[in-house]
Length: 259
Picture (tube, rainbow, N blue to C red):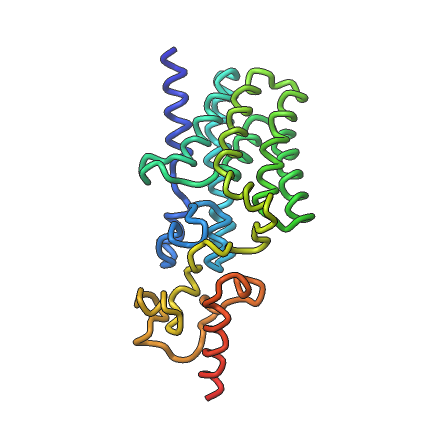
């Protein structure tokens, strides 16, 4: 019984490392929890505009699920499912952040690969395939976590099956707001929803009332030069029709540059 507790604590400790938050702070992008969905996962890190940082977050979130499950499966196979569940719970509810973490999709991918590479490949194929078809990240995550327990049972990992059913239930519950938007047809395909906060690279715009009130960051009003630096320039496909402030910001900043 004691080794089950140790295994669960070790899995939770690995899963609770908030790589998304740590990397964005080290890169000088501030607190990722203040951007769009407020999660610490790779999808929200991508919304800072830094693709390399988002890729690093994705890989590290995968690794923190893969490593403990891989070690547990080699040490004592029947512990792998418990460690997998503990790692995902650690990512979703890290004690260091007041039990407010990510939604567990990338870490679930990691624990699937840790349990067995065929399970991981099925998870990744369903995830990437659904995103490629729909361009909706949350739909890819939901489809993959549903496919994972089915693949685990079909491939003969019966001891881990109930734990992965619990993981799927947890991830689906954490995506309940996304599911509601999917049902209403309002889930965003590329970035934020109407109700989400302004992205970090746009919230500092001096034309924006939010940015002027915050008066922080590289583009606050006292240092506005009339140009967006490359790290802060909004893309045409990101939020331009979602936040009513942004088209106004873009139009006025263009007028300022022409003058």
